[in-house]
Length: 364
Ligand SMILES: Nc1nc2c(ncn2[C@@H]2O[C@H](COP(=O)(O)OP(=O)(O)OP(=O)(O)O)[C@@H](O)[C@H]2O)c(=O)[nH]1
Ligand SMILES: [Mg+2]
Image: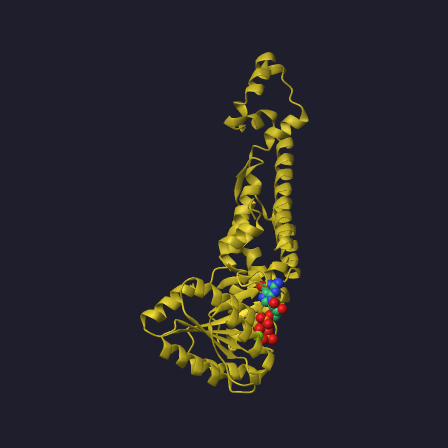
């Protein structure tokens, strides 16, 4: 998961570090040895082996080797300059884009990084990669910050307090994983003790209804369905009425996959939203579609307004571009990631988890 993204970020860290180190070395080699010594850190001076050496050799006779000089020089404070980072960040921006990161998101990450890095003072070899990593984390977190937080369970609880079922409507293009995700969410909610009704409002294909029937049966949740070709809004509305009359907690509305370029079908979705007044419109996108998933989200957001997103097939996604881009482009948070075909393959998403994962925390 996200292997390529991780590689790319780690190479940025290395390259910036090497640049800054090299410049520090060059600057140090030009300066007086005495000056260099002044900036040695306490830690270095206290190293017992070096103390021993100094005791043996009178200070005025001590001629440090070039290697040693460089070792000391690297302890000096250096300021990161535009020169140090420019090429690397140029490349990073392009590489992010070729990793399916949306252009505006890649630009934003680059700008954040420039602001974070240029002018920053770093001291010592070990501090440079840490500073770069911290800056990377901040830049990534900033594009993952939604306009509004959404918590699935809070939404369900709030509706419950109001004495009505929460209505969650799932939208997305063909094959993005809506039906599978609904089954996973139904399981998640059921495991938490909520009663769930699924509305088979994908009346476009008979097979879609059968697919949901199978899930509902296996999960032990109620399915409200119509016939192939029925008005999807009417089927969903029936499901909500059923849930209201039976005191159920949540209605999950499956909708037919549709091309986001198909104006009629997008209008149909708009109508469904008007009739249902869902608590959440959840965009389901296939992470493997990369930048196209981001464009889909943008268009669904423009037409119907999306409150949050779930990205699927992330188990096979090396690039991570869609995951990194969707929130910045739509303002909507990612709630979960689909990480397999089983009912439990739904992972809670947080920006911190993602950033940790791609910037190479040990466990990631
Ligand atoms: N590996 C993997 N496969 C997934 C995941 N989510 C869904 N799939 C698979 O993707 C395929 C399509 O999933 P569906 O749930 O039928 O997609 P849909 O959006 O309902 O499709 P339509 O109703 O035709 O628009 C199925 O083979 C799923 O098993 C996931 O997180 N990981
Ligand atoms: Mg489906």
